[in-house]
Image (cartoon, rainbow, N blue to C red; front, top):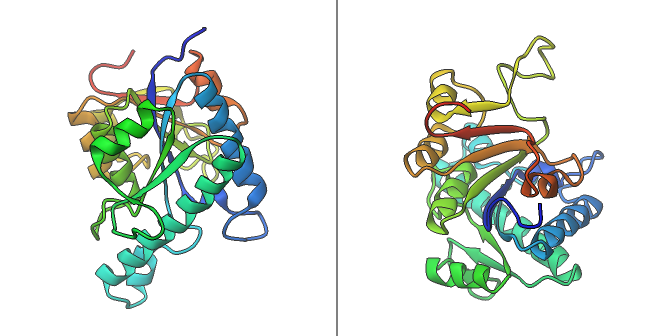
Length: 242
């Protein structure tokens, strides 16, 4: 295929994807590999929006469970995503790409405020846009933020990059009998309570007809093969399964 299957994507990465096996919060080798793959996507003509979680640094819900005020802990988690976004911006720039971090929280000395029209314009100019600080509100996950941004920028596909091949009936690391689902509808994912994304994120994509692909981020080159038309991971979409 000489053209990508869609012009604009929203790629959701977990913060844990940036961690080293030794437990470091940000592994430069992993960061640089991901940046190189995003550069290939950009060179192929794909406009890339990116949301990165903050779980490698701090997970707000965990701090709340330890007694910290939930609003405060979620705000700390939002700031963790900004740290990851700035690290990714630097890695992308070292790959020769133009990248912009746009934060839902006002941190003008560090990055741009999130403004939808400006974000779309950056994408149209071939810049990678990294959406930081979640939705800017407590009680919402970065999965929900990714779904929201995918809708707002009119992405043709949302990709959630995970540590497994795609969607399973159970955790494949714990249950060897877990069934792999190559295609699902959003209603099936919700009804079966599969561990894909939080309910808000799934409902947002379903109601706004944004297809979602769940795939393994550690399979090198997989996102590019997907953009060239190869069936990778699990596809979740509205309506009947293919």
